[in-house]
Image 1 (cartoon, one colour):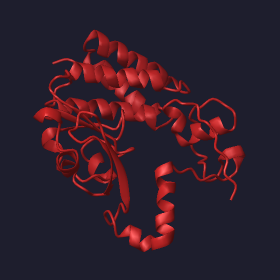
Image 2 (image 1 turned 120 degrees about the vertical axis):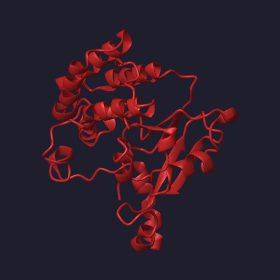
Image 3 (image 1 turned 45 degrees about the vertical axis):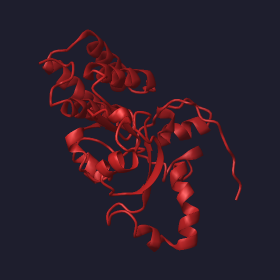
Image 4 (image 1 turned 90 degrees about the vertical axis):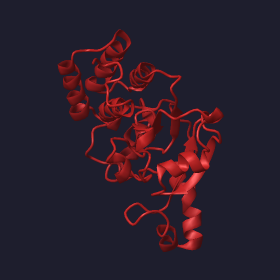
Length: 251
């Protein structure tokens, strides 16, 4: 087996599978329309399998012990394990390997030890910057894509970032939009323009609800890849996590 290591473009969206392929071909790390999917037309138009490092790292164990043994871990519908990274606000931050289906609360309190200095948790960001947010009373959910999706969040890379009362919800909201605007690859106008508009609204105050709902539909329905489509659910989940109020989007 020949292995070639290539340095990526460095941006967040450049890790999206079609953007990653574009970078390998020497182009900009921008998402491409799908279909066709990489499994049919990928790198240099050849069928291509795209996996992340975590998936490949599990292969040797599966080869040694067998797929059925691995599949006994996790849940019947989402088998195996997941690496979970806990942010610096936890009492015991770090990277942990857990079975899929492990309750999020057990990860937060049992592995993470809660927050440092006994500070209470206000909101928990799950699955990356656009993965979504859970309130402290909504942590009794399994760490699965299905379980988190039912709460408006996403499994993503399963990173857990803790927020306490020292950080205002308006600041968290602005950070979400700052990230979206900075990391949009610009390949499609809904995400490129919409993320900038959302950042302007979040920085200036609250836009009219009708305008926000229109932008939310545009991002969800017309964005080229999951990056733009994930922005509205992340913002909505943030509002719910902070007491079901729009966190800077108006009364």
